[in-house]
Length: 42
Image (cartoon, rainbow, N blue to C red; front, side, top):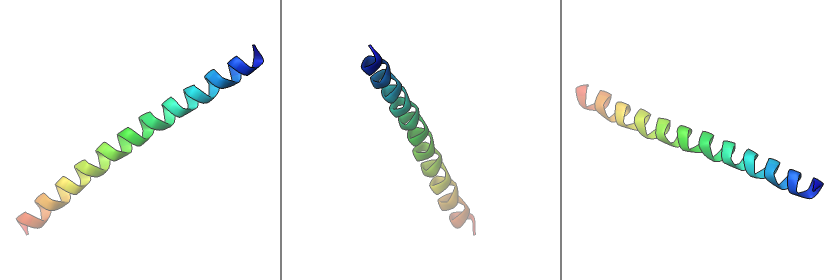
C-alpha cells in the first residue's frame, strides 16, 4: 500500500512537471514569434 502511494505521488509530480514544461515550451515559442515580428518591424 505504502509503495503504491509513493508511486502515485511520483506520477503526480511527473504530470505537474510535464505540464509546466509544456507551458514553458509554448511560452518560448510565442516569445520567439514575437521577437521575429519585432525584428521585421525594425
